[in-house]
Length: 179
Image (cartoon, rainbow, N blue to C red; front, side, top):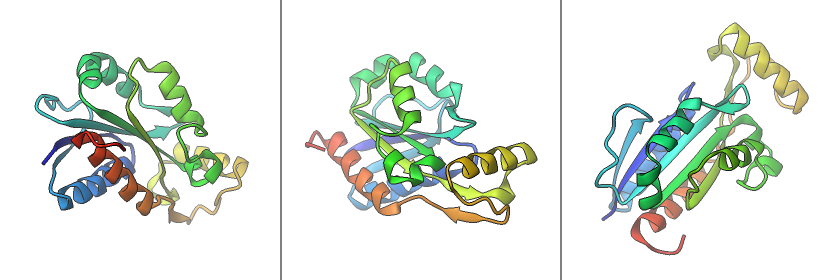
């Protein structure tokens, strides 16, 4: 049984929901998985693997993610670790991999941490949850990327089967098997 820490940086909760799904799948496979907000004073000690999930807001990951990585780099380099990013552009197949998602590529270029496993998931679009600025900024981005622009739209683009496959890869990482 592996002990796995699932940390999330989220604005509207999708990164946490993905961590919760990972936790469920890992627990179903007999592992212990803890979910916590990134930077909430959680100790990284005693885990067989660490996963960090971060959402995109205004085209960037939260600067706190980079700060957390810098502060905890030694542990992240010592323990098997993984990263996943959540964004609406990942709804497009051409932007849904670590190699093709510009946000993930930028993160990996800027970060001193090189996680062994990287995932990319599409988020949820829910115009009614957003404040006025985010609502219109996201609508503008959706216009540019040919996504839904009706302000009544609520659609979850997350591929939960892909999240489940990622859980299997996290399990393999935590137990020292080939991912």
